[in-house]
Structures are given as structure tokens and as C-alpha cells.
Length: 463
Image (cartoon, rainbow, N blue to C red; front, side):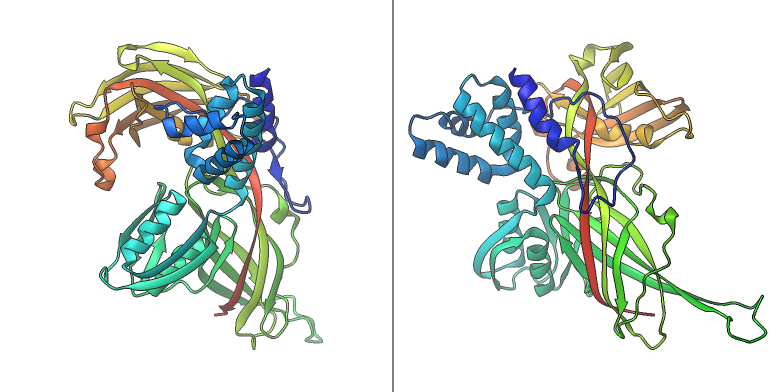
């Protein structure tokens, strides 16, 4: 009964499509039966376990305090709370955990993390370290002026605004274009003046260009239908907080576009613009690129006074083990069948050229049916390596460096050779000493949801 209840709780959230006005919908997809999302697999955390136990205390003050502290821990406590929700026999603990887990799952998708700080005379690194500690995100500061002192006061300020405020004050730019969960702050003699914030998302305008055309044929003898068109293309990035991996975005829908003279920049409606379409290729990441098309009316206009739109962002709402192979170093040429994938694992062996790194070689076949009216969809096979995890016996996770061999064989079959190792090779952070030999190889199923997000840009100069 507990497993059924928790699946229902998560299922409502993980497969929901958040819609505003019901105008933007993803393609109709019939999902498989809802699996239970990931629970804690690593070492137990005694402090979190004690707080969960306190949810069932006879003293209501203790119960309330434990709930508040678990909510404050956020993502760190969530996997442990899910595990306890499946295991507990205490109805009060179960009730409180169910409420907390559902709220935290929703907040992760739709609410920004917030920063409350009152700092005096701190260096840029100290400021970013304080924001990182409060949010749980990894922020790397590589700017100059490390010894300068700054004072800030943030009161429940959304994460992106807080980071940008500090970066602008210390002469740096914020970068989230890498394929990991780290926010990087570099010293740059440049600024990004056109940014829009929406919950846990940051919209960064990057470029605007124009194309002007004049009709030269089939002109009226009366001279009243020679047409001059000027098309404008505005490009921007969408960046998500580290807690919200994106898998893609849908075609944006413009709600308003006005120039500084009050004229409309809205293009003629085209039904093709409203079909579901995906950018980003299904890869998990925190940065993607988009653009919107506009039509210029009055050449005397100098700025886009206001541009409002909305876009469906496809988010990784959770993961569940599809295939989990234990004693993985002993497995040779063995087939495993999961809910959505069949995998023939050739081997997981230590890399002959790098001690402490391991190579997994396998062939995977997609079991879920494909649309017979569409060509081969390579999104699944191209992103399969991102769904892999390799753990040691203590639950510590290796970093996945991606495939060195990637052969799409068609018909939903892909052959991969993927390398794993400590993340010090990539980031300079020591990790090898904390990892034991691989003990568990996991292929995950991704649970997705589409969040519709509104954005707005103001006072963007026209070419």
C-alpha cells in the first residue's frame, strides 16, 4: 500500500504538464506505468534520519521543528525522505513526509532558490561562497580583484538575481553554458544588460539581426502595392538553476511585441509556428538557445520597448533505475532487461591507460514502441550515455565522461563504450581517493514534465 501511495503522489507531479491558459501543450504521449522516483542509494545521513524520526514525536513542537528543518535542507534531504516514506510504519511520519516531499518536488520545478544575506566588507569569493552554501549550488569564482571588499543585503532574493547583482558589482560575468551543474563567474570587461528572470530560469538576450526586402515583381500599375518588409530575429539563451536539468524547449509563443513608438512587431500568425517542436536534442543540460521572429513596422522606431512571450521547457523531473547491475566487474556478455531498455553488457573494466578510470562497453535496445510514421528518432540513442551511473560499494558515484564509441545501428539499437572516472580530470577537484572499485552499474529511465514559463525583455535596441 505504501508503494502504491507514494507512486500516486509522485505520479501527479512527474507526469503533469504545467500549463497557463492551456494553449501550449507537448505532443500527446502515453507514458508507461509511473515508476517510483529515485530514493537515497548512498550512505545514510544520521542527522536527516533523526529529523525524519522526530516527525513522529509525541511532542508537536518537535514534529513541527523537524518538518521545518527538513524543508530547509531541500534537495539534500529529499532522497532520504522518499526512502523513509516507502519504509515507515508510522502513519504520522508517513503523512508529514508525503506533504513535504510533494511540496519540495513542486518547488524544485517552479520556484527559484532564494538568498538571504547581510554581508559587510567581504571579498567576491567570500560572497559567492556564501551564496553557494545557502543554495547548495557549486559556484566557481575566477575573477580578478579577489581582495576588494563589498557589502550586500539580500532578503529572499531569487538565486539568479543575487548572483548577477554580485557579479556586476565586482566586474564579472556569469556563465552557465557548460554541461555540468557548476555556475562559473569570470572576470570580463563586458556586461549582459538584457536579462529576464522567471522563477528558476534566466533568459539572456544574445543577438538581434534584421533582414530587409523590397518586392520587385508583380507591382500594381497604380503603385500602391510595392511592399517593403523588414524581418527581425532576436536570439537568446535559457539557463536553468542546477536543480532543474532541461531536456529541451518547445517553440516559443509571442504574447506581445511593441516598439518605442507604440507600433506592433508581432509577425503574421502562422499555424506552423504552433506545432510542437523540440530544441536541445533531448540532452540533459542547463543552457539552451532559442530565437523569435519579429516584423518591423516603423523605421523610425529605435528599440523593442516590450517583448513578452512564453515557452514550454521540458524538465528532468526525476529518475528511476531501469536496469541495475551489481558486482559489475564480474559481469561478461550478459543480457539484462528493464522496463524500457534491453542491455547486453559486454564488460566494465579498468582503463588500461588511466588508473582509477573504468570503461563500460554494452549494446542497448529500446523496448518502447516508436512512431511508425516518423523516421528513426536518434534522441534516445544520442542521450543514452547521460542516463548511466557507476557506483562503488559505498554508494559514491563516478563521473561519466561520455562515449568514446557510439554506433547507432538503427531500429532503436545503439552500441556504446563509455568512460567513467573521478571528476578531478575535468575540474581539478580531487576525487580518486574517495572512490572504491565499481560495484554497481545503473541505466536510468528519465521522468519528464513540461513547465510553461513566461519571459519578458525590455528596451532592446533595434538594428
